[in-house]
Length: 496
Ligand SMILES: NC(=O)C1=CN([C@@H]2O[C@H](COP(=O)(O)OP(=O)(O)OC[C@H]3O[C@@H](n4cnc5c(N)ncnc54)[C@H](O)[C@@H]3O)[C@@H](O)[C@H]2O)[C@@H](O)CC1
Ligand SMILES: Nc1ncnc2c1ncn2[C@@H]1O[C@H](COP(=O)(O)OP(=O)(O)O)[C@@H](O)[C@H]1O
Ligand SMILES: [K+]
Image 1 (cartoon, protein in one colour):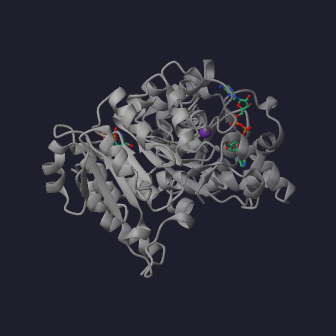
Image 2: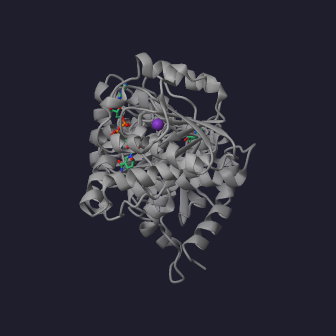
C-alpha cells in the first residue's frame, strides 16, 4: 500500500484496469460514489454545492451529485465550461444527472453546507487563470467546508505545488493510491484529511507500472531491517564511528553518537579532539572515545577496516580541514555526511560525486539551506519541479542517497527510487534533531542495511521517536524515545 502514483502513472493504472476488465466508466461511478460516501457524513439536510470541471474530475462530481440526491441531500451542481463540450465518461456522468446544471457565477457559495471541489484533478495541465482561478478563489473565500475530489483543484499531484490557486480542503478523497502531491508540502496541508477509496483497480497494475515513489513506511525497508539474532554478538551489529568537533561544538557529534547507538549499532567509537573528551565521556558511558589530535590519528584509527561506517559533519567546522577528514575516511567505507561536511562542498557537488564514487555507499542529509548551498549554480538540480524531483536529481548527480529534510522529508536513491515521509510532527524541527538523524542513519548503515533503506528507516524511526517523545521534545530526547519505537516495531515485525 505504500506506492505513490503520479498523475501520469494514475492514468496508466486507469487504462490497465480497463484492459484487465473494469471499464473506465465503472471506475468513475465508484469514484463518485466514494465521494458521496464522504459527503454523506455531514448530517441531512446539508446543502451541497458540487462544482464540476470540464474533465473526468468533473465527471466524478456529477456522479457524487446524483448519489447524494438519491440519499436525500439538497444538491446544486455548477459546471465550469460548456456542457456541450463534455466528452467521454464525463459526458455520460453528466447525462445521468437529472437536475439542473448552473453557471458557477450565479451561486452564492456561502449558502453551502459543504462544497464538493470537482473542478480539476490529475488532469491539471497548466496554472489556473481566468474563470477557473476566480472560482477557486471564491471557493477558498467562502469559508465553507470543502471536500476535494482526488486533489484540491489547482494542486499539482506530481509536485505538491499550487498552480495559480487552490482552496484549503477539509477532506480529500482520492482513488486507488495517493500521489506525491498528497504528501509534499504545501499539498499535504491543503488536502486536509486524505482518504483513499478502493474503486476496483486491481493491484496487478502495479506490476506493470512499477512505481518508483513510495510513502516512507516500514513495509518499504522491512526485508533488510537488521533484527538482532540470538546467535549474534555485538560485533555482528556493526561498528559506527562518529567524528567529533572540539569542546565548543561537540554537542552535535554527541547527539549523533547517541543516535547511532540507539539505532542499534553494536559499537560506536567517537574520534574526538582531546578537549572534547570529558564532554563525550560524561554524556554516554557506552561510547568509545578515541583521541584525534590530528588527521594522522584519524587515519591510524581507521586502519582497522572493521570500522566500516563513519558519520561526519555535525559540529565539525567548515572548509579544508573537514574535507581532509572526509578524504581520509571515504575510501571503501560507508559514509553519512551532514551539516558542516555538506557545506564544505558548497557549490562543488561534482567534488562530492567524485568522493561518493570512492566510498562503499554515501548518504547525505541536507536541510533545504544546505542543499541550496551544495548545489549552488546547478540549475538542473535546484530548479527541478518539486522537492521529490530535486532530491532525485541530486541523488543521480552524486551517486549517493539524498535525504532532503523537512516536514515532508524525501529520501532518494541514484537508481530513481524515492520515499516521502509523512510521520514527522512539526515539533521535530528543533536544534540538534538533524544530528541525531545522521547518527541513526550511520547506526543502521553499520548494521549492513543498504544505504537507501538505511536512510529511509532512519527517517521513519526519527519521526516516530519524535511522536513518542511528544510535544516539548528536545533533540536529546530522540535517542531515548527510540527504545519505545523499537519495542513497537519489533512487535509489528513479530520479534520476541
Ligand atoms: N484511475 C483514474 O485515472 C480515474 C480518474 N478519475 C477522475 O478523473 C480525474 C482525471 O480526469 P482528467 O484526466 O479528465 O483530468 P481533469 O478532470 O483533472 O482535468 C482535465 C480537464 O481540465 C482542463 N484543464 C486542465 N488544466 C486546466 C487549467 N489550468 N485551466 C483550465 N482548464 C484546465 C483540461 O483541458 C481538461 O478538460 C481524476 O482526478 C479523477 O477525479 C475517476 O473518474 C476514476 C478513475
Ligand atoms: N516543519 C517540520 N515538521 C516536521 N519535521 C521537521 C520540520 N522542519 C524540520 N523538520 C525535521 O527536523 C530535523 C531538523 O534537522 P536540521 O535542520 O538538520 O537541524 P539541526 O541542524 O539543528 O539538527 C530534520 O529531521 C527535519 O526533517
Ligand atoms: K478536485
